[in-house]
Length: 499
Ligand SMILES: [Zn+2]
Image 1 (cartoon, rainbow, N blue to C red):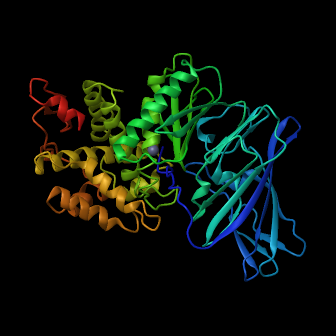
Image 2: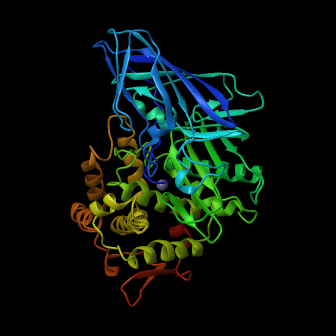
Image 3: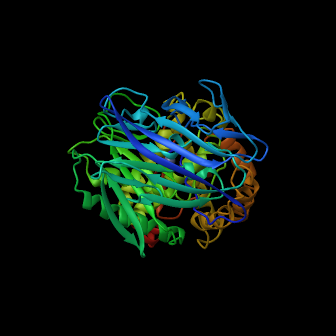
């Protein structure tokens, strides 16, 4: 979860595109697995082609350490690179056909995945799990990428599945930029299940047997969740969608990236191109209901973070209050709308997780800049954008509803945002004024001072500023934290909770 989450819009390429072909095969060596990758593409016309080297994905840094034996194997070309940095350029004859070779290896010990290594390449004798950002070295092009992936020599009983499809020896897709790297690739002893939403396939790839639920129960929950959220966004034409669920090592300590902790169970995930990758601690007491929040949150990133892109790099958390906080709010709203939580549970979660979590946090009024700077360093700061953004969304939603006689709400505003931002040349960072102007229009008052005060400066929204529907009552604790309860004696409370 986290703004990593940034899935992409799978768009047909327009204009000029350049082909690149990868061949991927397993190499079993001394009881360990690595992947051999060969890539073929045309070098740039000026005789120098810069390579994008795996670097960082959220809290997983120095990913280039998983790349071994990188070489340009075309005669006459020269690979210049500094060890342990991102700099890599191939010098060659202008326009020359180039071939790269490298290997991907797991760079941490052991056969279990600790939470803090979930986004690093995992390669075990029985399976692999690798995010596209870590698997591919790619030339940096301004043109579109016309990508072919060929999977060679894997054991015949291995499942091969990824964000772009399933069990194909050869895969082909086009992307207008390098966002195709925001993807997940699994192979080995995963079990693959398929369902559909309005005729479009949705896959679940899961491994491990220590879960407290059957695969078909989880698949059914996934199908309901996808249907619900696509209806929310009025966006059903998604050609395919994949979810992976991989067991974590039994939890020992909290680590960045996880979204939930209990005494026994934690889970985390990341939204990607037409997919999300999720992880959880296997436990026979882990029920499907324990994964509602994770699945609703990660799937919500298909729109908030993916189609409504924040435009920041995966380790830039300046807009996490939106990408994570609004995702939290609408994940919870959709859980209510779909019957995954009752109205009382919805209010309880708002109170406990978000209002109490934010207003009682020792860092509650940290500036947005301070949050972004410390996001990966301080778990308390990491929580803030989730909480602050959700409370801000709750505040906006009710202020809009009240100011418009219930005719408009934050949901409608998000649909307007989707229409505007889903064009690949627009994102929140570069086109932020559209968001503020839209908020101003919906609120019928200038939204910029609210954004400045409560997001950038981090000041708490005072209890008296919340405007609420008649069915929602507010109380304030000794520290000034607002808490809500549902007055079911008020007519129309069910309709109000459902919107
Ligand atoms: Zn998230």
